[in-house]
Structures are given as structure tokens and as C-alpha cells.
Length: 289
Image (tube, rainbow, N blue to C red; front, side, top):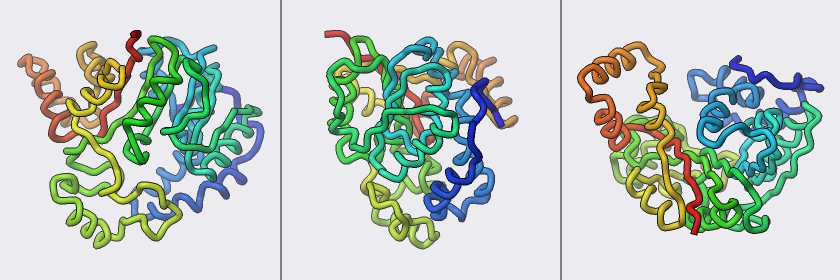
């Protein structure tokens, strides 16, 4: 495992596994299900790259007030707390709140956990230095209302780190089907059911149908963020410019090296972002009035 240098857990994994497993059964079709399940069980131990990515943009997390909005099963929240951040959790799914609590308790950590929606945050103005929002905005009722709330609870010049699904993603990040986002939603959902990957018969009832989720192309989301008081940076584009963006597959690395030699790497990245990339990883700064 790609572990963080953190405190060792104080309790075993059994209670956490019992709480998590019912929420994984809708994904047993995955070829890598066993490995995927392990990453859910030990989620906090797989956060090194994410935390390193964030700290390059916001500085060290120690002592910073951080809201993990839509914290899911709590892996990032616990890892951030172990890193020294003052973490507050907000999560819409009540069982996920309970899972996060169990995960934190394994390390002797007590986290403030709020069960609620991102469009109505029960926090005062300018409460947080940082808000993180991984794999959330596509599922909420009103993304714009959530951005308004995040802007309100952030301190001046505070940072929002979030992921946004590309409307033109070639491989859909939720259903893992190629070309799904290039056909009408009604047809896409019929194909999802045909492949046995729909989630309508599972415990998930909140914004899980493809037609109910919110995907954006890159310029569209940047424009929306600007209207809500944020300046947007593509974290992967910054890594590319700084020479830190490394493709995981050998073939892709060779192609990128060739494009870099020709001076075309940045242009190719923007084309890929527009027409292929599944997810944008963004750093938004609250613009001072």
C-alpha cells in the first residue's frame, strides 16, 4: 500500500468491514473488485498522492481548518486529520457518516461529522481555510447552490479542491463504459441496464442515474465557478507545465515524451481534456471582493 507516515490503527478492521461491505455489492462486476474493496477498507492509507497534490497548492495541512464536503467513507478526512489538519466532515449519506466515525475511531480520532446536503451547510461565514469536495458535485441537487455555500464558508482567499466529471468523458467514471457520454442519455441508461450496471436496485437512491448527474465540459465549469466568485486552476495542467505530470502507462509516457520533444504536449493535453479525460482535478481560490 502507498501509506502515509501516520499513527497505526488502534483497533482491527472487522467492524469497519461489516459496515462497508453492503455498500460495495453493486460493484461486484468489476474485474478488480477484490483490490477495489481493499482500497475502500484501508482508504486512509491510499491518500498520499492526493494530500501531496493538495499541499503543493495550499501548503502544509497542519493546523489548517478543513471541511471534507461529501466525505464518503472518510478515508481522506482521516488521512488529513492524521496529517494535522483540523477536519470537519459533512456527508449526505448517514451510513457513510457512521463508517467515517468507525474509521476515525480506529486511530483514536474524534471528528465533527455533520449529516447534511452541500447546498445547506450549517457553518458560519468564513469558517474554513480549505474545502475539499471529491466525487460530489455530480451528485448534488444543485451544483450552483453548493458553490455558493462553499464560497460563503471559505475564508477570504480560501481554497476549494474538487473533482468535476467531464461531459465528454470517453470512459464514464461511474459506469466504466466507453462512449456512454457520446450518446443521448435515454439510450445510455438503457445500455447501462442491459450491461447490468444500473444502481436502481441498490441502497443508492440519491442522484445515481446518469441523467440525474451533473457533468460539465471544462470551459463551462470554469465560467460557472467564476460567476460564483472563484478563480480556477487545473491541478494536472500545472503539474504538466512544471514537468511533474507522469502517465501511468508506458505507451502513454512514450507518446507524451514525443509530444514534449515536438513542443506539442500542452496543446495535446488541452485537446485530451476537452474530448477524452474522465475527470478534472481543480483548485479554486475564493476571490477577495
